[in-house]
Image (cartoon, rainbow, N blue to C red; front, top):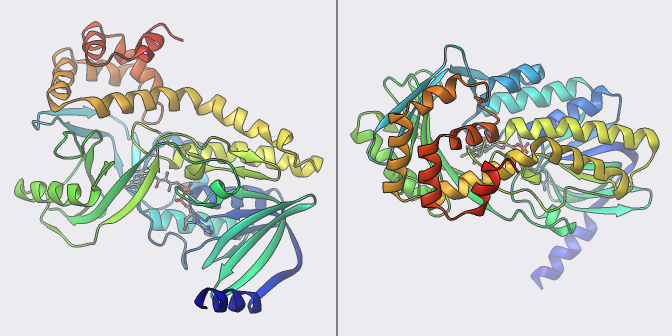
Length: 417
Ligand SMILES: Cc1cc2nc3c(=O)[nH]c(=O)nc-3n(C[C@H](O)[C@H](O)[C@H](O)COP(=O)(O)OP(=O)(O)OC[C@H]3O[C@@H](n4cnc5c(N)ncnc54)[C@H](O)[C@@H]3O)c2cc1C
């Protein structure tokens, strides 16, 4: 009965959004969605962005560490910078510390609410329309276009466009329903704002007690404030509470005021990121560094590719799956190796016991490997494939890793395949 009256209510409140036909519809106003909107609107297309939240940036769960390379490559995203990071301290399971430091800033910490809102304003400034509190429930493809069924304040409205770009972040059901598959592996993140007395550097913590298989962090943001967080496959909230208690006991944290927020992070890509009249970009496509879980830069890089492919499709009036498949080929060419090596390294780290973790820390420290990696041309905040390969060229580290894993991938890697 309840289901019937719900269905009736929906039927009565169903509208079609006039005869308006958009060139491009974008699902999700995260950094990737707003950057797509900015670029497509700048090219002169009629763009609409649907965002299920009432405000852009609302409920975002992200530490906001973005590499300098991203800011250099995308000056338009240069908003909300709180601090810059040129060094970081890494703590082994037994709290042995390795400090990595460069003379110049390697990354910036941004306030994601300010960052996301500024990018959305930029896109609107170019003419993109934003519809907030607008949840896309379904997307259907027709021969002559694509329709989004949007639920907004109790009403259901259909919108039409020539092509849809899905940038709805991790975990949406849309891509599964469209038959594009599901993200095969992911991890959960938990984070809270904390009060600190003096924290000058990013700190990263390893250990199975802290964040089994992954890592925890304390990142300075506003004066006297920091973000404490961690990644874990299970119970990230209770692990984070323990980490915060431990940091309090070490007087690194004075108090924890805000509630814990949670988010999912894809570790592997979506099986398929294109189909007729549709592309998937950003976290929704799994375009994330598996080593750290950072996704803003890779998402933006892939957004640029998506814009080029969409622009070509609109110019040629060719929205076939075959025509749009170049998007996946191009983004995989750019990121595929990074994602593959990064995921292998991530799985290896996950398998390490604390004793093995200590052993690796010891080898790195004793051989000054961290210093030589820092000085090497392969050092990059954003590209870890070459760095991992270079580290594995160290005989002692290579041998230790070989003893710890029977992985044939290591052999493949060391043979440069
Ligand atoms: C704890 C944690 C820490 C992180 N720290 C970092 C970091 O330091 N640096 C970094 O680079 N990355 C970090 N990340 C990852 C980063 O947050 C993501 O990679 C990034 O937000 C992806 O951007 P996006 O635009 O693809 O998706 P999102 O930012 O997730 O945006 C998707 C948007 O789509 C909207 N949406 C979803 N479904 C619908 C729908 N059906 N209809 C309408 N709207 C919809 C959502 O409300 C959201 O606003 C972190 C993640 C976590 C969980």
